[in-house]
Amino acid sequence: MSELFDEVNEEVRREQLKKLWDKYSIYFIALMVLVVAAVGGWRGYQYLEAKKAAEAGAAFEKAVELSEQNKHAEAETAFTELAAKAPSGYRTLARLRAAGEAASRDPKAAAKMFDDIAADRSVGGEWQDLAKIRAAGLLLDSASYADMQQRLEASAAPKSTFRHSAREMLALSAWRNNDTSAARKWLDAIAEDGETPPGLRSRAEALQALLPPVAKS
Image 1 (tube, rainbow, N blue to C red):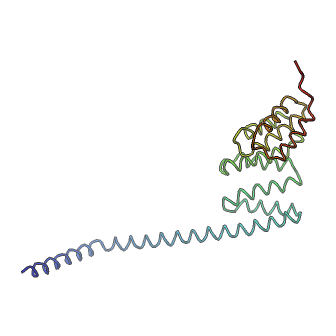
Image 2 (image 1 turned 45 degrees about the vertical axis):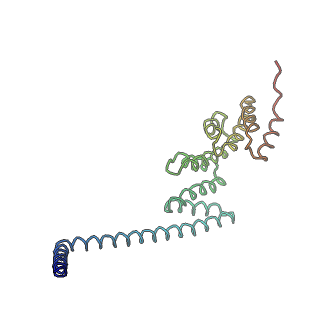
Image 3 (image 1 turned 180 degrees about the horizontal axis):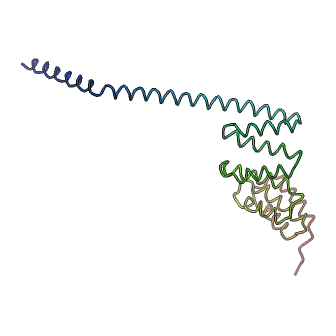
């Protein structure tokens, strides 16, 4: 008797499953099709992105080769083209390199290119800071100390990634503009920072020796 009931229950379950399948099979199949399409689409996207990155990498290397051959105009053009169409990582690098190549023909134009990168929040904070430093370096001989201070004071703050370079340029700018007090301020900051690179520390000490002695009260 128990075997009969088991067979009946099994038959009922099969019938219920059949009814459920007949009713919902179209939705299940549609879901499976969507899953397969989504996976295929994602795989396709990954392939295309990897292909773009590989192409950008090859184009970047060719542009670097032009730069190393002192073909700066051609290198600048190649980096500029790459910056317009490359994936985001290569785009920022290409913009920085294009500005660097432009420096050989027109430092002020190159500084403007670096300023544009520094103002672009989409590139990320450290790239912006680097662009600020590069722009300031190109203008160091011509800009006023007030201009350099506006450009670099934030980058010279403790814990800033490029504080050492920023402080050195501020000290040089102040010295060239006959602002002894400001020059001494930045040279002291360089001397007091335990992480100042040895080469920079030596240059700072040499510049410190050129300053007039502090007047005794």
